[in-house]
Image 1 (cartoon, one colour):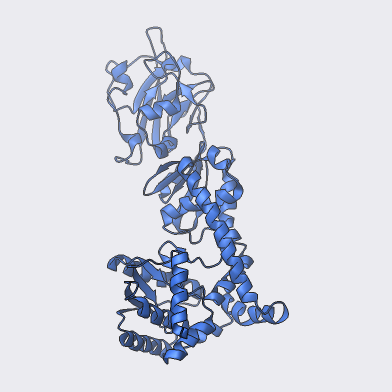
Image 2 (tube, rainbow, N blue to C red):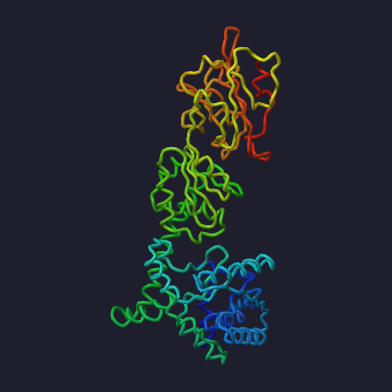
Length: 483
């Protein structure tokens, strides 16, 4: 068997075993004119007919190396033409030197994803090889990224595929030499400013010389075992996720904290990372440090929140953990109870403006105000009034009823969405709930013929939430209708 046929056989066998690509897939190949991606381009051009692949090469010109960048572009054009593979070239500009490597990576992937979606392709193929895998294991170990990072580069993660991990860089160059296909060396791969370059050019040769000549293969083998271990834990975590996820929508994921705490710490990492993934689209930039931050608020008293990368928040409310990319969802986590002094006539709290007025005589006519104005017996209030959000175990006697009802059940009956329940102001004295604003008074503070002193409370929402369940008034919940 010829060298090329042997490599083609290995590539198909590896892709099938790891389910990286399937027959008939539409594949977007990221090509840079370097040896790795050029070899990948050649191998897939040979496989496209037998495997029924549709191929599209994409080259990103960062315009960072002046004439060298232009030569890279020209060469990849020529090779794609010879191999009869369609090519898209995109030019991007990056200003400044700060965090250049990371910004370039993000810019590339933004282009890849847009093209993938526009052309309705299945996978983005990257040409990372065995040495890249070994370097990534070391790099992630230094970052303290845990099991997921120690597994290195994944064969397949979402739509990102790495089919070349079984090849060494020497093997890929051997393919090109055999077929007399040119490639270009990127001078930036020797730039010691980049951590990965220092690992590749300094640390790896030192480890091979002093400790183990097979260090690259050993790290790749370890990564494969850790990848299998991660997959096992991930599968188990995803089965649990279905049980602990209380609600999932485009902008919000709600998890049960008691059920979350029953999971082992390593499993919680994958559960929380999956909630993050559902909002962000990938698990990128969710690390062990994020797990520690979230766990610090799980058992904290009251509502708390932390900020995660890419504008995502983790908010602890009641016995639920909310992941959201809506900034409005963190407001309640920031708000403490407000105690109303007797001389106060107006306060702003929890996105509402409240007005208070003590009366000795009821108005001749009581104006209906859509549930946002109530009158109660002031003498039935014990101690000071406080405005707060719901608490575990809250219950009250809804107006017109004689028995207690759990606040949670009341919200369910009123069809209040889970993520809105903490935004509802609860008026309470030192013994009981007075008013669930703007839904229902407590029957224990209703006025009657013997009442001699009254308290009028008027609420005005400062935020329009016409599409949210908490602001939709149901017929029959207005206290004045019932009075």
